[in-house]
Structures are given as structure tokens and as C-alpha cells.
Amino acid sequence: MRILAVDIGTGTQDILLFDSKREVENCFKMVLPSPTVRLAGAIRAATSRGDDLLLTGVVMGGGPCGWAVGDHLKAGYAVYATPSAARTFNDDLDAVARMGVTLVSEDEAETLGSDVVRLRLADFDYRAIARAFAAFGVDLDSDLDGIAVAVFDHGHAPPDVSDRLFRFRYLEKRLRADNRLSALAFLAAGVPPIMTRMLAVAATSPRQDIPLLLMDTAPAAVLGALEDRQAGGQRPVIVANVGNFHCLAFRLGEEGIEGLFEHHTGKLSRQGLEELLDRLAEGSISNSEVFDSSGHGAVLFRHGAIPPEARRLVVTGARRGLLRSSRLNPSFATPFGDMMLTGCYGLIRAYGEVVPEAGERIDQALAGGGGKSLW
Image 1 (cartoon, rainbow, N blue to C red):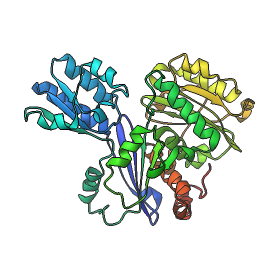
Image 2 (tube, rainbow, N blue to C red):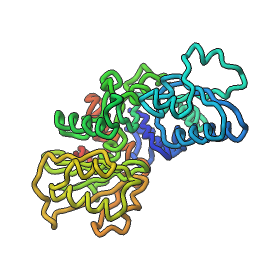
Image 3 (cartoon, helix red, strand yellow):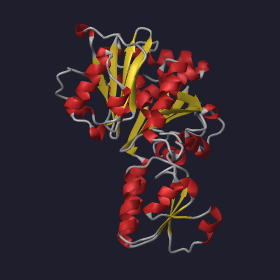
């Protein structure tokens, strides 16, 4: 069984070609610039040339590409965008227009002159990945059983609702209904309608002939971190994914998820993050303290404290260095010897849970890390 797992972050897209016939450590892998970083580079090149831009395609991850668009507009050059592409910068198209972006229909976009640089937005470029593998004699098109992609999706919040609040309410609702990390993973046909970024990946994937799994990036990373048996093999444990933009921490007990919080990494100092992790372990963290400090929120499904002597912290993510010298003495997860592929390993584990016919082979292939999921 071969599954292409792609974890799309802010800085990189991390790619694993999982093959159940290989030792996991010997599966082919790549770490490449993220789609938003690549797009930002193309936008900045247009700015340096003084070219106007037309953005088409679908909603994708923002951040670097959004900043590049802002700089392009400040430099005095035009940016045109179709509605589906413009929602990359804000679900509220009036807010996008206030940025200075000129919204155009698909038909109007066709009439713009050849002097406009046309850039197509999308998170998942299967063809580019397939070409990269093909350069080394690996044919994805003829021998692939499934695809799993992780993206961070705020969801489509109504204009009068905070994106942060909307996303965290969604996470809480999903986990109250199904208390497991793979509850945040879906086959393409089952993606909730509010998850517009996941839907965009599903709509733009050219491989409609094989299963496509979509999952949120942070839970994928936490699930993957548990594949590090030294780090994640005991309960209770708190697993924190300290990403470039977002930090999400789960408290896991013998019976499931006991609580979580999500915050913006850039708003957290080491001390501030340590204090939130302490309160998650104590069972005293509140939603208001996280949300009111510009985070997403917090929820506890179990309010009792983890005894101090039993507290364990496992950390992964691009900005895990924030806790490098922490008084909490964290373990840094390196599943199958590769921290950068943590989210991909989580995607593979989730695929085995959501696609039952794949579960046994995935369990067997991951047996080098312990076999059955520790979650």
C-alpha cells in the first residue's frame, strides 16, 4: 500500500510517500517550500518588475502570500482577484476590497490584458509533486492507493463572528461528538461545508480515482508525535504542536482527550506558554484567558489535576525551540527519527482509522514504532 501524505504548513510542505512494504525510515520523503511561500516569491518578483497581478484559483493558506500582496499594493501596483482566490486573504470580500484588491469575476478575469501577471492559487499541487518524484524514477500515477493532506483551516466564519472563536467552537464540537484526534480527519466527500480550505484541496486534486483524506495540521502533528514511543508511550501526557503561526496543545489520558487549548505562537513567550501548559495539566485553564489574550480558546473535558509527579510534556512543531530550555523538561518527538515528518506520520495513522480496509496494513508497517496506535 502506497499513500502520499502532504503536510502543508506556513514555511514548508512536508511530503512522505508511505509504502507498507518498506521500513518506515526508508520511505521516500521531501521537505519543500510551502505553497504560500512559493506564491509570495512570485508576487514579490512581480513587484520588483512593476507588474500588475491577477490572482485566480481557490482559497489557500495565507500569511506570506497575504503580506506580499499588501506590499505589492503599497508599492502602487494593481492586484485583481477572483472571489474564490480573494478569500485566501479574508472570508469577507468587502474586507479584501478595502485592502485595495480589485475583485473580478471569472469572465472579467479572462478579459484582462496580457500585461497582467496571472498567478493561480492552490494549496495542493499534485502534479508538481508527481514530477519531483518522477525525476527519481518514482511513478505516482501508476502506483498510488491513497492521498492524505493536512492544512490549517479556520473555517468560513460569518462576518460578525471571530475567526478564532469560530474555529475553536468547531474543534470543541467535533471532539465532544467523537473524542479522538482522527475525528478531525475526513474523506473528501465528508468534509464539513464550513471547512473551505479543505474543500478547495479536494476540488483541485486531479486524483479522483483514489481516496483523499483531509485533516487539520495541528491534530495531525500531535497524532504523529505519539508515534515516538519514547515520547508518547505513556498516559497522561500533554502534547504540544508549536507551529510557526499556531500553538495547539492536547491533554491526553487513558480514556481519551481530556482538554486542549490553541493560541497564536507569536503572542506567546516561553513563560506564557509554560503557564498555559501548567493550567492545562492542573485542569484550571479557561477559555476566556486564552481568547482574551488573542488566542483561539481552551476547553476541558476532565477538570481534575494531573499529579505533579505524573506530568509529561511532548513537543513538536517548527517553533518547538520556544520550549527548548523550559522548566517543564519536555521531550521532543522525533517519530521514526524525523521531526519534520511528524504531521505526515499522523496523517498515515489517521488514514488507517478513517479508511478501515487500510488499517491493518498501516498498523503492521508502523510496527517498528510499536504497532497499534498509541491513541
